Length: 248
Ligand code: IPE
Ligand code: IPE
Ligand code: MG
Image 1: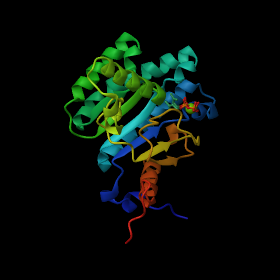
Image 2: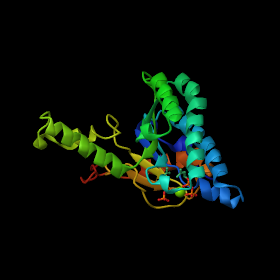
Image 3: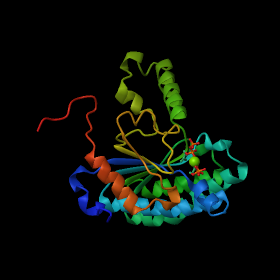
């Protein structure tokens, strides 16, 4: 059986506006090769580069990837240090090319609590692409959806205390503007790799009506073909948002 040519099948006028990805399975990929988990994290960077490139070429407006969660601090210290170093290395190495491609890089999450040199490197990169009008590329670092929601509640609570906000003025829009994802549309498609069927504290508020798609490939194996397949399958779904399918 030949595999369908998803690139040809994808409808250019029905692309997901915002794709979110939980990049999972680096450790297992490495373990299967009798290599340390860190080897898997490095291999995962190639998948990330290719995914960013493909999304930008296709004309996806927003791409958001989960790189390090608030729960990932539970891991051994050497793995955490390696991951942080790798993320800063990725940003340092890729920033010029991202900039040339008009990509606007953003970080979601409490990255300011990272080591000071990491924060400086991230801030420099963010400044460089801040005015770019191309694809918005969000990397979630030290991100947790519950943490994000608690911080939003604290922020709105402080505004109320200062007399700048009335509790009854808090609506869905107001609340969404207090999240890290302020100004971003909700994801249309959420992809998770490595066969895990869970959301692991990613974008809980934002994925209320997102289409979920799970891949059995480990993140270092994720490739253009799999991404195109996810997009094509997304296009076959009937998104009703609680309403009814439009009668043809
Ligand atoms: C994803 O791969 C990267 C991060 C969570 C930082 P994992 O490190 O979770 O790999 P597995 O799931 O243990 O295989
Ligand atoms: C989710 O993966 C977080 C990231 C991809 C950064 P995890 O590997 O941390 O998730 P669990 O522990 O399997 O739920
Ligand atoms: Mg994992």
